[in-house]
Picture 1 (tube, one colour):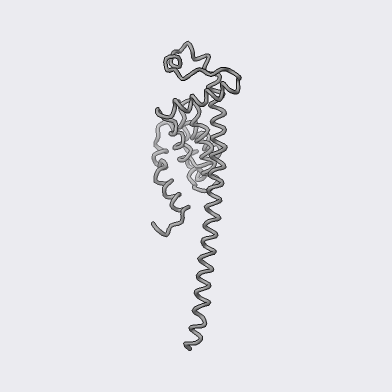
Picture 2 (tube, rainbow, N blue to C red):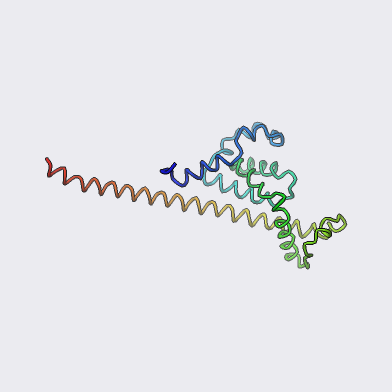
Length: 194
């Protein structure tokens, strides 16, 4: 729709791409939450809810890829933020993105621990005997990367939402001024005609 505000277009897009409430209610892993899914705050699209959902989803995406949806849903319910967005954002972690994301986590963890990081060699990384050498820097680095992504995501949504709101207010004021100017220009013409 052409005349729709950018905020309404974003909300419509989010509603279209985010999992629907019925889908999440019927999801076999999310049934564990039962009646907790009925909280209306989990379905609102407002600045607080979307920013919180971005923080939750972007943090959980750096956790091990087992049960991420369940963990994101639990955090969303606990923090009362938008559930579909929280759950959808964990899908940033997928078979294509896991290797670079987790290697970045490993590099960050190695740097913080003061260890020399290993090169990305699939043979070394996939051999179970080497996992003890990798797990501590990987876990620490993923935790830090998840926290950084979470904070950046939260404040990005807050800033963009606020900027969009201020833009809409300016546009409304401009339209109001234009309408008042038209009315004031039309008033003398009516006076002369009568």
